[in-house]
Length: 89
View 1 (cartoon, rainbow, N blue to C red):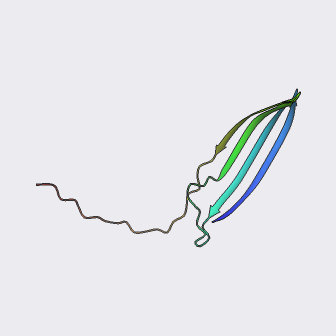
View 2: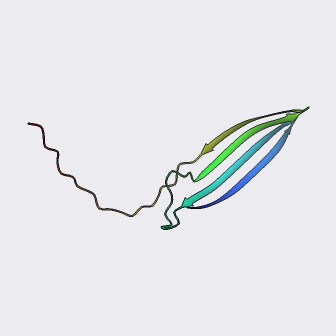
């Protein structure tokens, strides 16, 4: 597999020991042999957090999410046919 991606993060100090944090990751995963996208790998993930650090105390509340998985490109195949199942007699 070949994984590629980009990441961005930012933290903003609000005051009184509180900060807001935002992270975003965009990525893809492809098979080495065919170059096709790997199924079930999200196009991006993100996180949003509230951080606290003051007077020796530290805490965080982080929410994470992801986008829909990439739709893999697959070679088209003709439809398969199966024989009908005989009814019991």
